[in-house]
Length: 132
Image: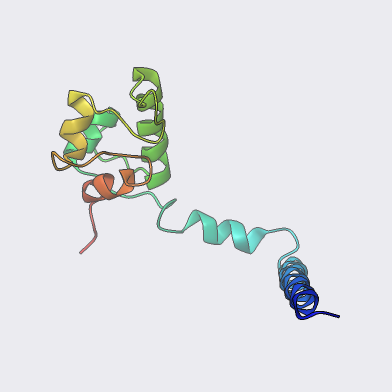
């Protein structure tokens, strides 16, 4: 056997061990929480799904009544829907967002920054009111 063959075999074995480790972890988690109730409770209360207060500017953009709480994921869905409905995706690079006046006023990015789906949360985050 050559050195390259041995190295290839070792790499394949490492990959197999990694896959088996994942499988064991999955089986263990299924045994601990077979119907997924614990996972659902955790998912409801994580920071992205927890309903929270938002700024008046974002509330106006979403047309949300005063006092209503909304989760970050719901805000993101609404903004994505707005972008799609208004055709604000860049025609050549769909990851980039072309800002209209309403969206530019809401997100307030620096002039030289291109807003993408990857950095959208960065510009939405100031609109979530933090509890003192």
